[in-house]
Structures are given as C-alpha cells and as structure tokens.
Length: 245
Image 1: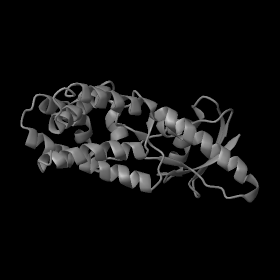
Image 2: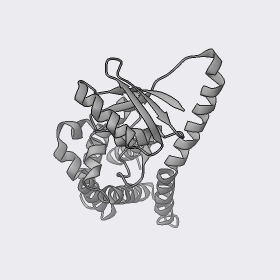
Image 3: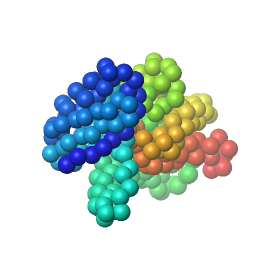
Image 4: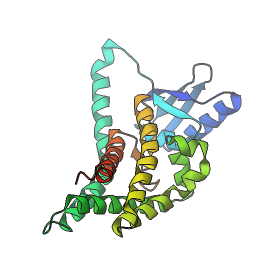
C-alpha cells in the first residue's frame, strides 16, 4: 500500500536523502520516494504504519503529516481508515488515561474520610508531577528532543528541556510536603502555561508528533488529551491561588 505524506523542514538535497534513508530503515517500509519541491514523500508499506512511528524515525527538524486526498470514489475507504486511526490513537492513549485515573483515585482515597478539596488538589498535583517526571527520567537523553518539538521555551533554550523532569519532581515534592505551596502554584502556571501554548499550536496546525508528557518510554501521540491534562493542572493551580477551595 502507498501513502503520501507532507514533510516540512526539507531545504536541500541532503535533507531529501536523510529523510529517505530514515524512512526506509523502518520495518515494513518497502520503498520511499521524496519530492523536495513539493515537500512530499510517497511511502510504500507492507502494512499500515502509524504516523507517530514515521515521525519518530525522522530528525526533530522534520515534521510529517498525512496528505489529504479528496476523491469521491475513495470516501468510504477514507472513512474506514480514519476510524481505524482513531481506534489506534485511543489505544495509544490508554496508558495516559489509566495513569491519570489512578492518580485521581489515590488522591480521593487519601481524603475520603475527611474530605478537603484543597488537600485533594494538592495531592493530585503532587502525584501527577512525581509520576510524570518518573517516566521522563527513564530517558533523560531522548526526552528533551521530543519536548522541544512543541514546547516554545524548550525550542529556544535546550537546557530547559534537560532540567524539566527535575523541575516536575521538585514541584511534586513541594505539593506533597506542603512546602512553599504558593510558589509551586505560580511555577506550575508558568511552566504548564508555556507548554499548553505549544500544545495548542501543534493541535491547531494538525501536526502529528509524539507527546513527551510521559517521556519517550511510552509512545503517545499529541492529542486533545495532552491539552486537557495540562488544563486540569492549570485550573487547579488558579483555584488554589484564588483560595476558592
């Protein structure tokens, strides 16, 4: 089967050769034809390969997206492909959704006898940071590259991507230990606010890239779920700062 993709970031023949080689090295890819002028790649596959895997094989400066082909005769096939792709995306998001579910459940169980919204949110945010930073630390070398693909600050300051997992760990400990909570809340608004801007832009541009929220250990696609998880943390931080709960 053949699929046509748009690849942005190619500027010369060397880029074209690099992209072709990277894509050919993927299992089940039998042929790759790259058109530098049109910024397109025609990939022949033995079986369907998720676009996240294609993006992962390329250098960070390249962005690959599926080319939309409008054809009334293939509308049914396109719909079927979109449904299958959506199911695949949900399967990939399963670890993320399970982790958030367990964090929320643990936070509820800690306070269900003497319920306190503020205590629940502090523990939720603390556990959120600790768990998510753990996955990022599994690959401290690979995480910055994935993170800078959508985080505006990490793009401009590579060092920020390297220390980000440690920032999350520190924030998690601050929330769980109830240490300088106001400072931790303000830092949360800043770091997650910056990331959310990048996530929003990525989603609006319909770029298919890997989400680095759980590091590189789990291959998660960038979806609305990433925006929602950041939004939950930001809303909690705002509510806590305003002393609503």
